Structure formats: structure tokens, C-alpha cells
Image (cartoon, rainbow, N blue to C red; front, side, top):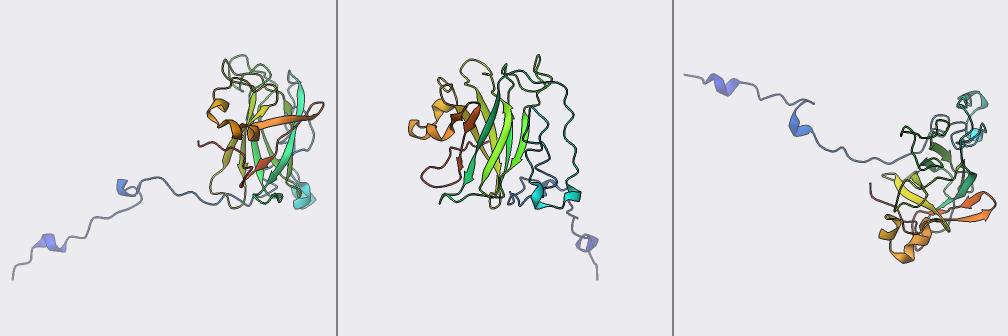
Length: 219
């Protein structure tokens, strides 16, 4: 009897280098977060040396050892506090969310751009408290160019969120003629406007669901 050797050849091996296996990986739930590694000491203070940002009560004192950033100088511009609450659709506080901030300096330049403020990074990270409140200390940003009102980009990370939620913070009285804001239905734009609560303090609540849901942008 004749046996065709081709019939006895092993099937082609498929390993992790096979192009048929390539593709976009699925999203996974974001969080919960390790409070000693993500919201770091001083991460929410972009202009000073406070501990603002992390929640040291959530881990042993011995773990609260990350050093503050070494100051290189005082950033130019008006120092402000941006604060608010992260709440769910029922208005209940979200106590274990994390916010990331990214913004231009007082002259409207991002870190690393020519002539940007060497003393201002423009990036920060803050955990929410038990009441859902976050607090950033930063600089009032300048306009990045014609058609762009001063704004701050915020990303929200939290338990149960498959992807981070990206939004923008504009400032009441300074949000006219913005190319991005004009794309938002007029009746929803108020969810992107921070209001002056007192001198140097701007209030911006983030609503994750429901009738007053904050406008979030696809990335």
C-alpha cells in the first residue's frame, strides 16, 4: 500500500506572530485604582508644593513616600482652583474616580512647544474624595489660537467605565466663538462651562449619566 507523505504532514503551526491573530484588543473595565501609585502626592497641584491629588487615608502612612516634583520656578499667569464633584445619574457622589487634566499655559502653549512656560507642565491627576469632590490648583489657560477659547481637557476614569470619558472645561465669560464648543447642541453647552464660585475658584461638576449628563467627546 502506498501512503502519500503529504497526508502525514502536521498542520501549520499558528502562534502569536500569525497575522490572522492581529487586531484591536477589547476594552477592559478601568479601575479600581491603587491610590499609592496613580493619584500621586502633589499631582493635582500644578503650581505649588502641596500634597493635593492623592488620598493618603486610603493606604498606610509608610506607603505615602512618593516625592513631590522639584519646582523649577513659578509659572506665569493667574493661579486658580478648579473644583467640583463627580456624580452618577442619581446625583450620588462617585468616591473612587480619578481625573486627569491637560492644558496649555497662560500664553496658550502646551508643554514642549516653542516658548512654552518652562515652569509649567500642564498635566495633573486627582482622586475624588468620599463626597465625589476633586480639586486642582493650576493656571488659567490662554487661548491656543483663533477659534479656540481658553479651556482645560479632563479625562475621567472610574469603576465600571470601559473607557475613559473625555470632556472639556470652558470658563464662563470666556467661551465665545470656540470651534469645538460650537459643535455641541446649544442646550447642552452649559455642561461644559465652569462658573466662578469665588475669587480664583472655578466650579465644574461632572455628571456621568442622566438628564444633566456632561458632554463627553469621542477620541
